[in-house]
Image (cartoon, rainbow, N blue to C red; front, side):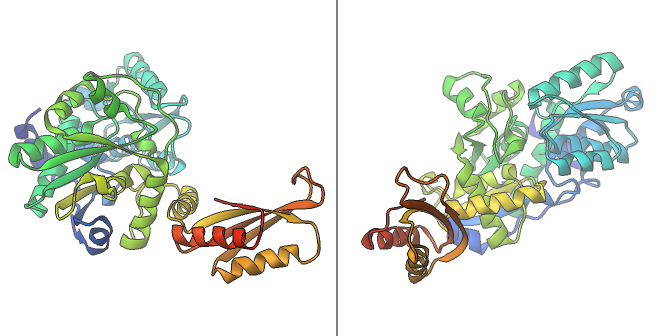
Length: 400
């Protein structure tokens, strides 16, 4: 898989793939301390970069393969990309998804005419069934990442980044199985070797991080993560070889950082991305990255997030940002105690969102009750002020 393959893929798919913009963001630049540009590939028709590789792969099939159809395993975005372009090219598509795949991705796959099969608790379970169906029904199995044609298609994003930001210094790319970063890194390093390519993974799925640490491709046990599209237990062999050659490092970000990044993009850019698409911003906000003064491109490559998840993510992001907190106060069960607590909280400028007054499961001291208040706050220093105010007035409370 070379630059020549990526250039050929670009010519092959250019009429069917949206040429996503890569605009400068003043707000994110101020936040991160560098010049930030966002590659908005979540604006593809199916909401992710996966269309690039899917279209390239499907267009390379022979007539017999097209008639028989293809099968894929996907947590969502790869299946969406193959289903959509399979429909356009009149190629039958079967998508095997884990049972926990986001509902919006499941329904959209079916909307594009794919036969969707929900199976297993993980991507690996889905992949095993997809391979079984491939053998039984003589369908071509289309990998999500470890395939030269798929990687070449994803690499077209790298070509577009260099066209739009020719003086780029750093490109930050999410890592799941490794197909996107392999293609992007190949394109960028082949044309501008001095550009740094950095990968980002959720700490709950550090597949590449562990493989690079041990110097070989390893399998790990993933945990549930907001970046569900990156929760791959084992990366691709071809991807790993390319990554070892071209990618500077694989950085880990935690769930709080991911939630906060989704929130920042909502507030500052008016942009809705899924967890997997937000991890580049989480990395860029980390001052230890040494990005000050650099021209940095963030690959915002997926926007398929359930609306029910958005509300929970906003709450988690606000909490991570110090804009929500909870006060657990153990008060004497006497008239005026709750009013006194509310007055103290109001004096700090906090806005009380919710109050729970618990007489049944309080402290062992039956003369006391537990009151839990959820507060809207300005930032972490405001929370510290609330904590000090309660201490100064002798209130037995925990603030978190």
